[in-house]
Image 1 (tube, rainbow, N blue to C red):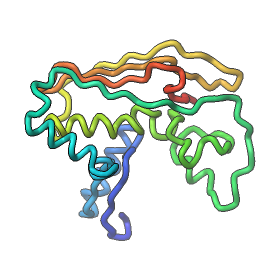
Image 2: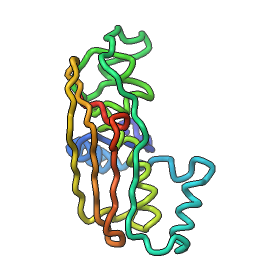
Image 3: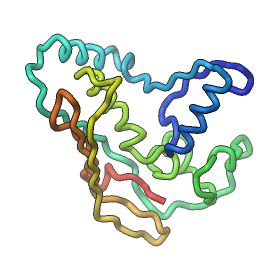
Image 4: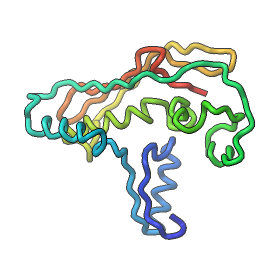
Length: 193
């Protein structure tokens, strides 16, 4: 953005509210066009668009409850520390996350299972499903009116990596009283470091 270019950013936008405020300030000062999205609304052979249309047309009846589940995550520890590949600037890639030694399981597709980077599967992958559901019921612009989260049962491994065995979040929207997302199996947990 400092070069004057407009930006489309795939989620996750930031990990913290403070970083989001800095980003917003930069966009305002520079006058850039900045958009964030998930790409899922138009992917997968338009299946999500078709589901949206069915919901908006009333074909699903009155929506009283929505549940968004996150699929299985990769698990396993300990991971072997390695020297980063020559093409990867590990410090820059890590950004504001806590400084740790490089392991291949922290980058590329696997980054999403580490809490320090996208916030784990719920904020990385779950946001796609929650976005589609909110879009379908017409609350994309307003979102929930209340949110509540629950998580428990962390198992500590020799590497000090903690795996939550279950997590659930629920929300209430103006049109749907019960809206929830969950990870309920060890295999759908977030690596927390």
